Image 1 (cartoon, rainbow, N blue to C red):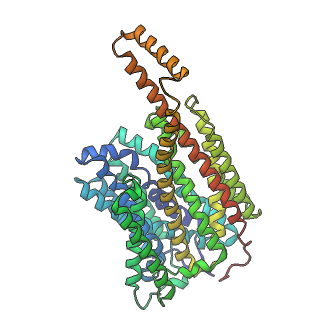
Image 2 (cartoon, one colour; image 1 turned 90 degrees about the horizontal axis):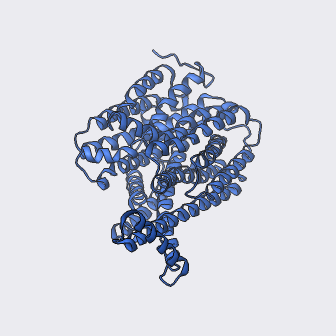
Length: 518
């Protein structure tokens, strides 16, 4: 028996109970995109696999997640949203247990595929349920609650994962999902109900061709973005084939869905101006969010010598900034033009990255913390308003498809961001190193003086054997570190410019009036 009989299209229960039921699984799904990263060396050692093989633990999750996201709205129509939501939660819980209990890498990758697919379904459904449970004037508050899972979880994931792995075992990185998911399942059974337009509605036919084209295209794209940098991109034959497969399949998918009477993904939703703008900005948003989450730990651990725990402590304050801004945006920014809020958030984001672009190897941890707080504040502000405005002019019947596509593009933007910043970090470091090497020759007075000082230091502390070779090693290490610092600063400036490039797009939003279907 359910307690959620709807009155005039609105749930009879307090919508904040629904929000609590949706935020819990959202947080766990978003957490699982990053919490396992720091545990990979332990997983590889425990399951007798190489580090390269263990990365499939991450890749398999992302691929399955990407495939299921755009079709979550269609599956909701077939099974019913509440039933599909609970099934996804149950499967995610079982897959989390199997991941923790895995005795081989193959078993773990299989469990992660199931976990990624079920988790991918939870994100857009949770978002659609939240948007429909709150009246339009309070949807920014609903998205503030949703943002707690989507933004804060990936930030705290590496720190939490490192602490759990060091204190207990990598298996508890997955077992921690179980109690949270069980509570979420019980709350969903009590408080969630299918809206009237979705009850008993199922398509007359299944677009198997469209699904196949989408699945193959997205899987190839995700593999390309996740592993292309390791293969030196187009220097590898399989990258060319993956690129061709991605282009052909996704182009065929778009043509198929636009001409199919019962599409598995209704791409016509992109005809809505606000959603099309939000769809584009979600990609930029994902690029910035996940790109910065990857490059900062690399800088702090590889160049500053931070431990994993100290790196987490330096980055986690971003979540605190986001927590403040999503609360502020949800409660107090409803009367302000959303376009202004998004533009302000993007400017603050660019400012935080500009500040980071001025750091060096002599900084203290506080020089990293406070730009991260500002970055988190701006990211949280943009997320709440961007998500609310993107769907503000859509009818409820389009909400499931729209949230699936929106979350897909945010995730794909993140994958693109990770691929771009890691590639540019490597390539730009090589360029800077080549330029600096041209000034380090035996005929350069400064170079000669530095070598002589180092030789004198080594003679004073350890004898005269091999002092010149030791001096060259020290100089090369300094050269490598400095070239990587400059590459990091280049990435900060590039992402800052990308944030500013989103401002003209934000101005294309229409101010929402009375939404369709109301």
